[in-house]
Image (tube, rainbow, N blue to C red; front, side, top):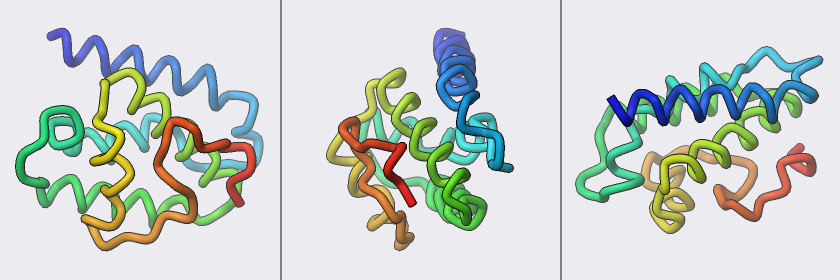
Length: 116
């Protein structure tokens, strides 16, 4: 129950943060949250990387093709990581572990407004 509430709060925070930059974007924070939800246990607790997590990361990479969509994804990922207490090392290594290329570093210090 607490996990669901935290995820709902993350979703709401993402909508507030991403609202001003969604004018030309088709990707939503809801899609980002849904795509990355199978990764939560791995990113917060460790253990084996679920196949469903990499499926979600791959699908998100395929959906974030435009600059506005990549900026939305970046902002949402940062909010998710902060809200869930994701391990920064596992978060940064997730694209490589899933064999997916992400055009920006997965880090709390990434300036999403500069993502191309």
